Amino acid sequence: MQYIPNTEADCRAMLDVIGVRSSEELFADIPSKLRLKRGLNLAPPLCEAGLWRHMRALARGCGDT
Image (tube, rainbow, N blue to C red):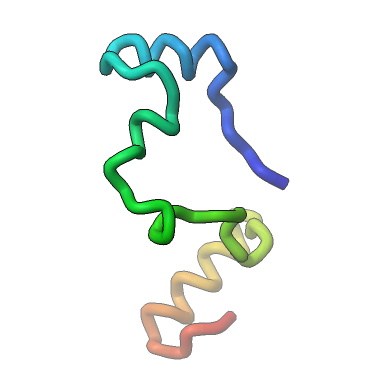
């Protein structure tokens, strides 16, 4: 699931402010071989308690919960 809270109107307004016609134009200086082709492979979201456990484990140097 992808979560992007910006509406099409929001995106259009932001692009207008910075003076570009599209997100493709915005990122045109980045070579296409370096651009993300598909979504990120992220772990599923955590509840607040799960996040605390995970962060404590990271702080201990364990890495995983």
